[in-house]
Length: 142
Image 1 (cartoon, one colour):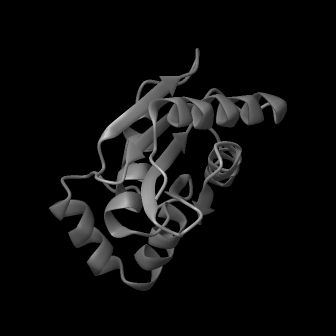
Image 2 (cartoon, helix red, strand yellow):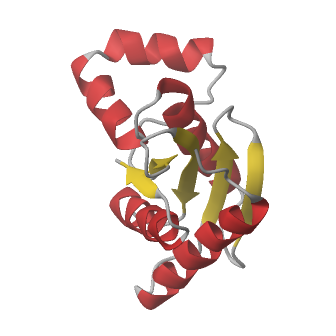
Image 3 (cartoon, helix red, strand yellow):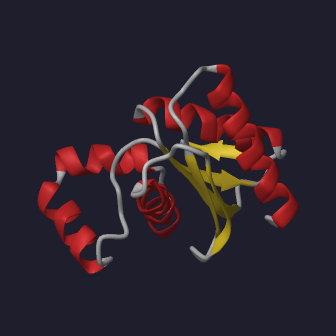
């Protein structure tokens, strides 16, 4: 099992932000959590709005706590809204069921953490998360 080091977490963030600049996206906030849902690293670009940290964290926390991407949680929200509402309530609002929360897996498919990104359209946030995860030598779980 590979460890999600601070160096790797920072590489994920740097690559995600570089991808966002390449795509001319709105300013991002990028959060990296370890497999237990603890904050490993966070960066907020200049100009990112103030609630982006909470949104990015909720995307990542929901993904790592449920073992599926926040994109998958969005599907659950459509199919089983009562379950999702209960999950959000039980987690004290720590779950955001929209794309942009991506699992970080090692090459053996072991969960090592999650990335959450907020700032632009959710699909683009997710695209940047995947770029960061892959640049750090991990597998993106979408």
